Length: 237
Image (cartoon, rainbow, N blue to C red; front, side, top):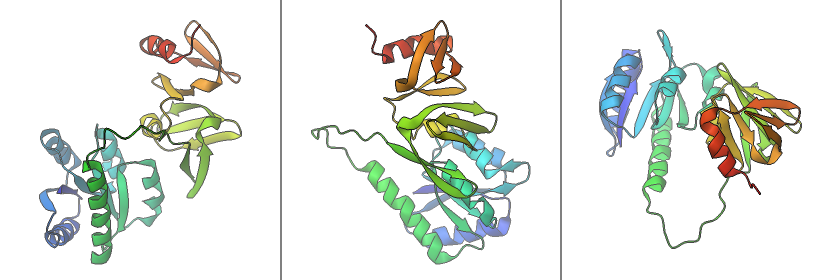
């Protein structure tokens, strides 16, 4: 596995380097103290894994992830255990290592990355019949508590700054994540992004007029770029 380290603390970078050298299949390509330099490197070279600190001057680890179009697997390294709950908002984060990093926990985190990569690289049997693997529920993190939501009960999701608002049947939650991140976790045959700030449940549309959709009692805009694709999704007569 090709990896990099992004951490503003030189001692932490050296510890990760030392631990990586103990793993025969891990190749540490570079160590960075600057998110900007790491970003430049990733524009030129892809990696399998990033060991990422959360707190860095002027730029958090979570903000760094959001700058990446296709984040690789990420293991967070931090002494701030209170930030551990936020990792649930990022699909690319597979583990949280608390500083000072314990070798046995490092090995477990790397083993998890290794197993995920083995599954991703395993060839798919094209002869096997397709099954419905759409997620029917998801978990959100509210005040360090995981809450299970049934996808079918979500009416729509609106992006508001650095958080999203989830509305639906008995559902009214605010979550610190992005619209694109939660979209990845929803069934694509049910949910559709009609606007840069809105995801909707197609089954809960009441009516469509001009460039707006009525869901429950909420009027939701449709962008011009999305209107034709939305029409193709619907069962029109």
